[in-house]
Amino acid sequence: MKIKVYVDMIKVPVVPWTPPPVGTLMVNVDATLFLSSRSMGSGVVIRDYKGNCAAARCDNFPNVQIPELAGALAVPCALVFAQEEGMDNICVATDCLSVVPGGHGG
Figure 1 (cartoon, rainbow, N blue to C red):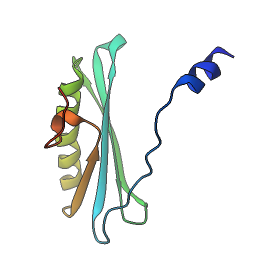
Figure 2: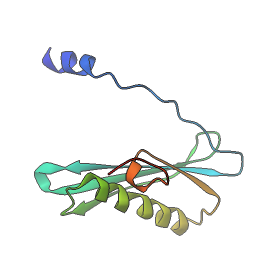
Figure 3: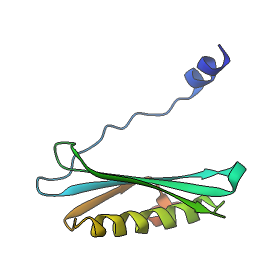
Figure 4: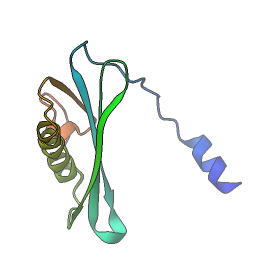
């Protein structure tokens, strides 16, 4: 099957989720581009130290086609979402290197 063969060729290291300290929530955020619709999507999952989901959200933004811009939009939106949910003791996890201090994106 062509799809299985292609998936088997992808060698992506699996990085296990690391819980935040007790009393802290982890905000995991990521973004993706949809080239066919010239838009981006972002997803946020907020979990406690046990891995229980406290909140989740996804958003779509039209007219975004630049990966660095997608990350630059997704992370602040995740922070606003956490604030709207009344969550103030948080850690943020993302692979959007362009918005991570010391990251090497862009």
